[in-house]
Every structure is written in C-alpha cells, then in structure tokens.
Image (cartoon, rainbow, N blue to C red; front, side, top):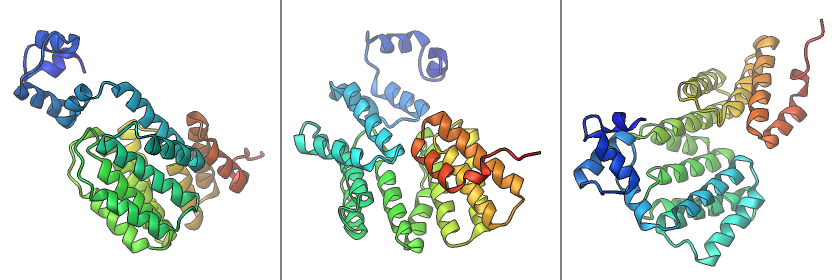
Length: 275
C-alpha cells in the first residue's frame, strides 16, 4: 500500500510521511482510522511503542513457527521451555503464546497424555490478554481441536473447528487461517470416511490458498486431496497429479518432513509413467 492509498479518506499524504519518519504522532482518531485500513488491532501500535525489543520478539515468534511447521517438536519443546524458564519474556500475551506451543510439543513428544495437554490449552483460552495477536485464542482452540480429532474425539474437534469458522474477524491473517481450519476439517471428514465432504472442503481450502496467494500448506492440501481421491477410486492420473503437486510444494518450501513421508508412502505415484 502506498502512502497515498493509506492516507486516502484519513489525512494528507504528507502526514503519513511524517508519521513514518517519526516526526509526529497521530491523533487517536487518525490512528484508529489507520488501524482499520491496515486491518490491525489498535493495540498493535501501542505494543510496538511499549516494547523496545520488538524486533527480537518478532524473530522469536518466527523461530517458534519454524519449529512447528517442520514438525520439530523436540526443538520446539526445548526452545519454548528455555524461554518460559528464563523469565525474560514476561508479557502476558507472549507467555500465553509460548505456553500454547509448549503444551502442543508435550503432546506430540508423548511427555503427557492428550487429556492433560488439552486441559492446559483450555486453561490458556481463559487467560485475558491484550496485545497484537487478535487470533491467539483462535490458534489455541485450533490446537485443541486437532488434538481431540487425533484421539478419535472427532465430533468434539469438529465442533470447535466450526466455531472458529463462524468467527467474525476483519483480518487478512484470519482469512488465511481459515485455510488451515478447512484443511483440518477436511482431515476429520476423511478420518470419518466422509470422502465427498472431505474432498469439497479440501478443494475449497486449495481455492482460498490461490486467492490469497498463500502457499504455506498447499503441499499438505494436495497430499490430502490425493488421499481422498484414492478412497473415491478416481482415475490414477488425477491421483498422481495431486501427489506430484504436493511434492512440488514440499520441495519449494523446504518441508523435508512431509516430503519424506510422501516419498516413503506414495512413491509409486511420483515416478513418470512409462510410455
């Protein structure tokens, strides 16, 4: 977004320029209008001002996401445990964020049973925090739903997923998060053998990924689609194309964990058809 686009309907472009340079501060009305246009909570701007080590915290959040996306739960466990124990990051929102990933890592490493981890995650949804991440509780609820679904509590998990999908949040990040939720709903429908529904849900997530130009889980979505197509006994060429797209995105995004699973379990679909 250009300065002129941001200023349109709010103030002069020159005022946006002064704000960016730090030459002036906005009025609360101007700040409110800017936050609406940028689809960010008003508290975001105050958080940036309050925390001198804002960039360091952003890097930490990126590190946590990297461990999670690569399914490196041992690394995630060690990292979050160290940050929580050293007492350096005491902001309530940040502490809640770290704890949520800590309990997720405990679950996947089987250091506690799923009931304990779900109970602790539910506790975190009751913690009142005001900060930059308006989707923090939504992410925690998503983690709870996934764990429940993975332990054959399909109906309980699905109920939470559907609650999340009905939330009204004006945020680009929420729009993209819907892709992940739809992926998870499709997975539960697949586990329940509702293959037609699973396929429709997964394809909707693929469509949204394209619309929002978000490749983050396109590999997983195409892999899931291919699994569903197998169950529906669709043409082999259709199944093969989906698995090959999955490998393409795993390669592109460096998701070696998923690529290894694909090549190990579905390698026969990855070799070119001999003429």
